[in-house]
Image (cartoon, rainbow, N blue to C red):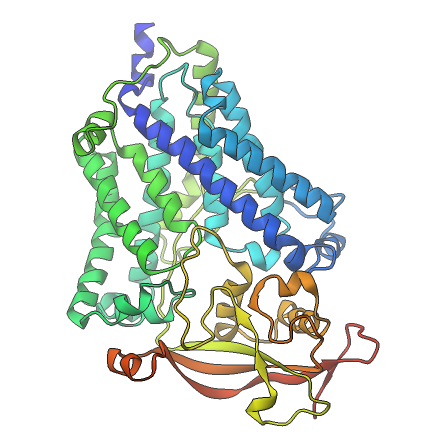
Length: 490
């Protein structure tokens, strides 16, 4: 039907392939990360057990599959279901069927992961959780190989990218002075939550280049997003700039799947002719269904209207003097507000956890052995690893401790688990200095960390320089019966 031609974005098939398969791949990583870490963090015997949380929050407003029952076995079933469905979407199997099939697959991923996020408490309080949920729901309505990509859904995905980028830019301009005086990147690479293998080299770049980084960030987040709505090739060029800036962040840090979601979603503004012009191996013409069924048109239009209505509050938030960051305005986690790093910390404080087998500990350092974390800095000689898009939740929460308070319930529970030599908890760590044996005491110490200069690294091989600040907690031990009560050394 000719009158439906406006609805069909036939020049965006490559974009649809990237959006569907890329989003599914990130869901696969999210479910894998959850299966490996959730039981130890939030399971039946976790640091913040979900059953206890549900007992206290019987009127939990947000939907979750675990509302009436949680078990670690059910959680693993949910994760395996998510992994299998996501893998099928990555290889493109549901996309070969009618448009409702990939829609159903993505809605399953969306609901299962939302069920996890809504009971995940502080360990799932990151902005990229709701970003992945919104992306999964929106991408669900891109249809299948039997129908052309729907224009309205592509526009809604571009609108999501706009909120993600422009919202982050506005948060920075309204935030710390360092973003306005162009000094933010003097500190960011060194103080970011989880540095990567290239973070130190990025930090040691000349300061004029760091100012170029800030200027480039402001341009990419405050100017470029408006061109995503422009005609081609401007929209595609704008998407390319966003993709390149996100790849720089991927290369210099570990921000879970935040940057990867932005990269994948930005392809919504890349047309097939532009993609083919840049990379000739990308086909210029794709096989698509001849017509869009009326029933599918009705479904997509209804979803489009709903998401546009839900966009009202996020749109106001973008220009509000009290702009919210990483906030949901409805219980379904759709059309959210985003933003990150409104301020940049100028010093890196790390909480180092140590244990000892001594009967009565003293301050002698040789009696204390340090636990090694997978991602967060600890050993001053160790090269930071690249983990993203995989999300190390415990390591991220450890970064927040000195910025808030070390006296968090989950952190005291973590110390208890170390004193019990709890295997699931130890599995979250890179190194247990006691090889599964129970320490008698543990403590948490705060250190000031900074990257070593090139001369310092050549001299002693240490990538970090650290200075002890104080004992944040401890020494502390369990009572003789290993119940949850702790005894502090007076």
